[in-house]
Length: 315
Figure (cartoon, one colour):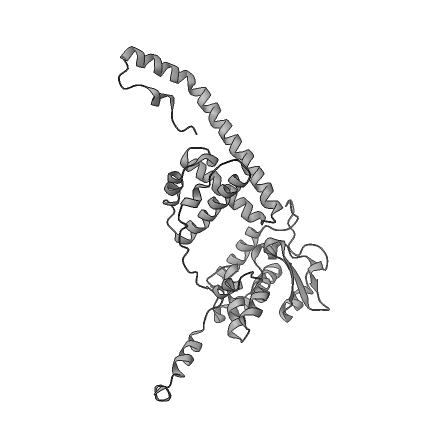
């Protein structure tokens, strides 16, 4: 991924004979250019491996590490130059190709983390993303499953494992990567609690819903609840949980995803009278502003609020 080919060095005023000689030399140099491409790719791979090790030391989630390193590879392929050496113009050119605002903001965050690390690790003197204005992330709206759809989904004739995955998302608010890693030892049927290790490897003990407690009686008391043969981890991958739950919802005619069930969990908590601080601890958010994304104001509550307005009393 060299920035210029040997032909770029041909002088405009060179004689035809001289041009032929230079062109011939450029052809001879092609294998060297290919080797340079390989060397640059290997150098990027080495830096990405170091960055991944650093991120693991910072307790970054493995999914975050994989998403970031993959994005840097894509950036390098787009720019046709080593990812550690890109300029502000090349970064602008790449981000301009991303249409969706929230996706653009996410990818920018990956790039910002990469160049910030390069500077901290001494691989680069400057951070070009400091001069790139961060894309404005659009306000995200909650997308919970409707109550009527939830009743249909829970009444569906799913496989036992699928039904438990749905309950973990809807009645404990677990994310797909948390569902994949549930073990029998995490569930205490005496205390009626479930232990969850979430983002940043933070472990929390949550109350166990009665429906989940009943379902837990059919699950292994020790070991993975959702084992997978041949898996490096021994349990199913988060993507498998996503696919299984999505397929079950599609068969039941219910729109949404596993994360929509988590949105239902947060929204229903608040609508049932749970204060935001308690909902924050149950959703395991570090920031209360994040919890607000998962809470949707019911139309009935909005209508009741408007109907309570009394112009006569205000006068």
